Image (cartoon, rainbow, N blue to C red; front, top):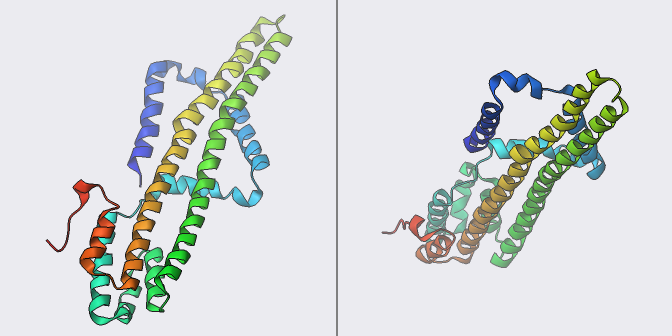
Length: 253
């Protein structure tokens, strides 16, 4: 679970609530305003994206809250160990380890090497897989950004609705307050949800995507090295190029 996301949202709401004052919080509760912002945004997303893509939002939320990118420092020793075994005993020796590999991407690459695929063919197949991963991640981030764009817009729609209701009933002072509440609170809801939840979520998804792609590129380099029969020390040097210098630690030292 990504505690930073959860803590950030809760802390953000807490800061705003403390600024408003606990005794004034009920003033900011408006069902019509909420329906205009959330309902309008949901409808706009349905217009903007095919129905088949709407389920992506559930995966987007799950990926933001619960997904963790594998640590390259854990993957490098594993790949170097595979490379050492394959160089010493032949590539078929890796058949015994494929069932213990948790990462499907690593397992796919190792199996291609075991099956005798040429390094260039392995490179092409795995890079194609990475391109599809990028596209899936891009769609999720785009949907989160779209929601973050639509919500303030529907907040403004709610403001216009509230102002129209207020202007049509200026002869009845008792209706001015509720109409103005819808006008202002709707904008508040739209701006709050967009800037505290969905736009930051889009940013985190992009960062997660970049991190995951980096790890997959490291894995591709390692598997191609294994298939090519590279010296494990040379292979480790190649893989360490993906890490910051301070994170590099050779298992041959």
